[in-house]
Length: 364
Image (cartoon, rainbow, N blue to C red; front, side, top):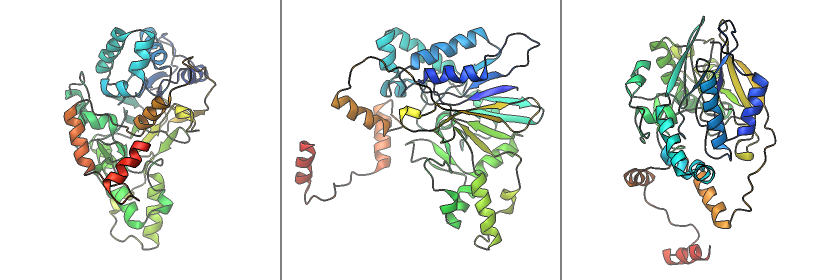
């Protein structure tokens, strides 16, 4: 510290430039204590200017090598960039050899970082924790110069989520006492939303922080309405209410020891994600002598659309399908494994026979 933490950008180049204009660029002067930048991954795919985002960030790294650092996100890999737009964009603008050089670059990006200030240490990564991660130093033992697998520590660091993500979970005020107990007391469960990796509960995050002498986990990976989210705080508040009124009797009291910081904070820096979410973007700033990160929120800025003409009906359908499948397997073996997890196909409702359903699909 001091350092600014930036979440997903996903090819939104003009929003990146607007954010940097508001925050300012770092300095190479030793006496200058202006904050540097740590980007938490997912620079490419979905947005139309992924190449420009990557090229500009590389330029910043070369200009300010001690002040600008990039971590790897789950989209910095061959399989996802093939399905979610970066490969197509890169080939169209610069050719296939440049795309392969980007892939090589992605494989050299670090998977996590530890930030230190006078208050303690913060772990930063794209996704989060793993049941296979017990010590931060274990991350150094990974061979990161490869494609991420669909399970295990390498996968989880890039893909895992807290169990209380507000975009997909039940709001704490609407949870039953049992559901709150599961969110707070749970360790790791399969991440059905992503199709791979795990989700981790408050107990898992709290135990990991205490065992590694960390203050907080700061990650990206998930769009947030306000650009950032403090995980588990609302659930802890509702849990305390349930304990007070006697709804929960067997809750582990050690989990409700007040914390100065939330166990996990998500930051997402792409405002109006995919041009339709309506969310704000945010950047966190960790100062040298302050415990709480400062939050800067901002809205999207106008950006020109590439001149490609109107997309065909088939391309629109394909885009909708891809956006509904967050994890795309890179090998046929992985595809078979995921299909097996999904179970047997269910018949279409409202049709008396499979042949009748098949005819309906042919019409569609």
